[in-house]
Length: 312
Ligand SMILES: [Zn+2]
Picture 1 (spheres, rainbow, N blue to C red):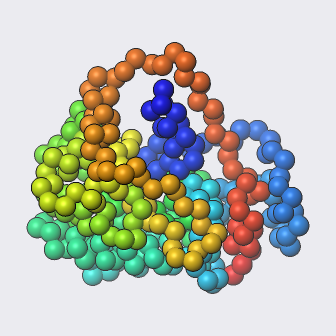
Picture 2 (picture 1 turned 90 degrees about the vertical axis):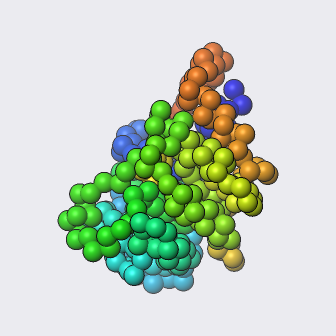
């Protein structure tokens, strides 16, 4: 029950990518809009679906960089674009136009890719979805990635950094799991461990989502400092990529931080996830049915997101 509730809350509030890769259905009329938005000078209907408004924006605003709201309910002012190709990275699936983020996230991706480039068999990183140019909900895919502080990083070793745009649309990452995520498979290497360790050890990083078998593998293999393991969080999906979530930048008063992970390395909890995969517990008869999640309308987002939509 506790696990169910905790999971449910996570899915509602701050879920990572991987569970919502199908477009969600609009669920009827928008609820009463909060007042403040209608007092703004915008031409945007506060009852309009937020994903349609933000999904239509092709470029960022020139405002000072600022995340507004939470990872799964917000927007991004002053977004920066990760160059499609750099010395140690390539952005993938360029047609999605999701290689935008807060400048702190861009800087993080660049420095992690330099670490990855030093691993045997890797020349850097393939970068999956970050955010839309102005953040916000997406027409397809993720519930989170809304404030420019989330980045999906492919598990496929980036050994070729000369992929064409077409190749970047068509090649796939590789799954690292077997037994539905209870274990890693033979594609998993020490390089994956070292890259995830470097990411989790970065002070800008709040948490990293990866499938449970990978966390347990890293728990078993780490013989040195284990503090970084705390930030590695077992989650559904996340066997083709891992998902890095950054802390709110210093001074970003409109950014809503997530509670930090529980103290400790989290290895016992990850082992419980694995045990539950191998021997699924019977369904809890007292569990409430999951509530369908309503699509966000503009009025659901922080008021600053109206300015983010209308700014140049
Ligand atoms: Zn993600």
